[in-house]
Image (cartoon, rainbow over all chains, first blue to last red; front, side):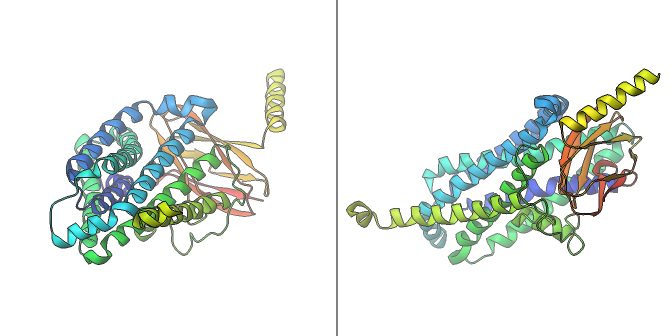
Length: 275
Length: 106
């Protein structure tokens, strides 16, 4: 039961932390609970479908179907997070003002909520599909009540850590709140981009450039809890390749530059028109 | 039998020439067979993992920076390297107590 719980916890953690970050990042946007709750439900449903199709996906495209599928999911999630980040470059100030005054929510956040919901659905779907497969495997050799209690324990553990992160985030002073969630979204997106790069290397679609830039696994293993947390939050990988590192840095740089550019454009509309 | 073996050698040699060096590992009763393989350093290597069990397994190695779910009774291809000499342990994440192994790069 505990072995099952540990693996389920590991798989759940990434999705749970992403949900928490997204929930925090959309504070003050009307309808976020319905959107994100719906996205989690859609992700779980999708996970069951994908788990059923694993054999088909894995066998597709000369055996690299799984890698391409994962990379596509991760890249889509990165695009959605980027969309949100650029939206915040324009609307962040307004959201922060309303949060400070404890006034009503922002109504026009529909588009960014949709984008983030897609990101949440994809995260839950990807991790969920692996969990479903694992559970199916364990269920053939272990009594059902053991499997189910392990599943419940693992999911609860993952969700509890997600909830802790959320509670921690909402205690960040309002002044800094959206800057903090903004950075978390950027780090999250960069980590997912690096994961996508790894899948494309594994499939021999892209070259690693440098196979292993460094190896910090003896110092901080990704299997340990701090290692896992850092893996999700900032994309920690003990032995990254050159390609992964480049994708990571490029994602952060692109998001910072694009968001600065957007906020200057909208912050000074007259000057922008004049030039 | 001899012809068959000769054909096998030919097929393996052909695949190796046509492609990167290829190594095979099987998963049997939640164990890797063999659980240690030696691969050349400084070269990209194609790893074929055949899951002969009915249940899925996740091939995972933090040091190799690879992970892949392999459904029951199917095989997966994983490209690794080019690697520096050393030992690179891997596990079957779904059965970590038994499914362990390592790749020795020479």
